[in-house]
Image (cartoon, rainbow, N blue to C red; front, side):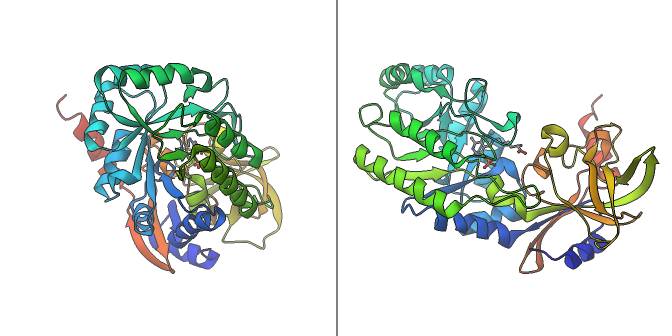
Length: 406
Ligand code: LLP
């Protein structure tokens, strides 16, 4: 953990708003999963969508991680950073023909989640190697928006469509080398992981899919966001996962590779967003602490009602009061926390918004024309990567350049 003193030093030196990531923690989380899940064939593919910071990606690449990519640009970024193509999986979602062709040309294995695309492949890409994504019919996740299976989701092929899948595979002489499912993000119940694995393993028979090389059980490993929230017992969960998979491999008659694609688990806790309070005001009973960041830079509270711990680094021992911690964006919903008890906030205090490593920077935008914060990656207390914040003029130059011909 980066100390609060160090965070204050970084805020003073680099300015705020600023994302700070602990690179060591990311690598420790990556290695932990190999300790927790005692499966000799385990492969972890980092879900790049959680955070595409180059400093973190290089650390994960050097540690041996694969990549779960969800757009052609994510595939290109991973390839250009030197991730081997056989360590990347492209989980396509409503892809265009042009996107399909582009990723096909790279040789990266595609994970196909619709009968529509499978039909096109069977018709035009005879003999293609691919992975198939099924909907495991288990509903879990930390928000209705982050559950990616069950009756309401757009993802995956229905388990009940397996016969039609087999017919298309035969028609196209396709080679199904992997099966995939992803239940959701921030899975609340260990049981959901086992059930979803079971649903996929039930259809992964040698009769249905004789050429399997791997099963990919997606991401979704939860980390605590609330104060005092219990950490899942990943040692127990890992043991159960490994034993379920070992039994499956015996039934299948071959030792397959087990894959997981965590995003949050690897990067969420490594990150913090530092922001400075510049305006204190009162709206009747409400104390409002206005800071120099806003929801375009960390949208999870506004989008999902997500809770992020906030620490007042500048006045940790101050008398406690309730605050609405608001941003600098022209919308009332622009709040990081509502009626949150915090040590007294004074103007120019630095707040640390915790667990800002996953789905914060990567979901950011420049709404209201405020450029995204700078980013720092630390390892062993040293800054190993810095991405500077665009100045207003640099951001405006880029916008004007796009419209230069008009
Ligand atoms: N694999 C697939 C196919 C996915 O769709 C996802 C996440 C992952 C892996 C990684 O899931 P994770 O391990 O990070 O839970 N923006 C939301 C999370 C959306 C996740 C979407 N898919 C949030 O901030 O909570």
